[in-house]
Length: 337
Picture (cartoon, rainbow, N blue to C red):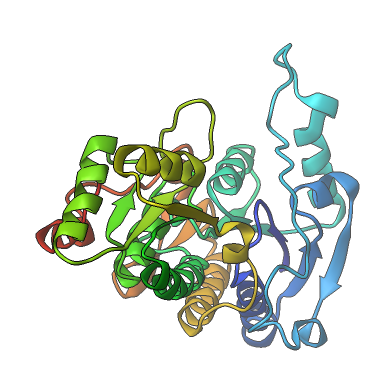
């Protein structure tokens, strides 16, 4: 069999480990041929495809980014008239046919899995692997990249504690996550955040101000506020800037903001993400060998399983107020707004 593999959307730690997991299992165990499609779905439009072998995989396990490159090209996005620009779906199909690819492995987040589902509807043999630091892909308990991002954010929060304590300030740190608060929740809890604001849970600035003042009355003259980038703000302001300004207005306390940004997406993956990526890559190849296409690899509990791409497309996995970390956090006196 000839298997094509691409990475699409934002980069995150663990992509290269996944490529390695797919290629090594495909080549060494099943005797398949693997072809790397460069720069996501753009590679299928530009016919930019290269053969991968064991020599291509050296040093990938701990390497950040993606050796195949990535893009946010959306081949099924329509123009204003409703027509596909340049008939991109037809170009994709022709490239797959020209290279005689028996299956395409699509590594990516929500947009990628949605595109993969559309390809499956057109008759292409597709297997998806969820990739996102945001952890918001529906159908899998965890996506690789999430643990690495949480570790980076937690380390940053740990470092802000000493500055906040020394200067008796309120420190606001903004973490990524798009519309989901998973990174803010997990890093905020792990880093000892005093206030954690998530897009999924409405907040009240008066309650936040009261929580900070109450800490001062209890002999705690500084506070750490962890903010997800996707929370609602006024005036189009960024999350950390808005919350920091509002806290100063509410309390009169000196407040500083830190936006962690793309640091969360770079660098080497954690050991957990390396192993998860390896397991997911290997399971994707098992699905191909069994002819079980139209699936996305998923972690369910401690087991690697799969879910139909048609069930995943267009859905988001979001934090709920019943999540045990939210419940336990509230029991411990942490303010969620």
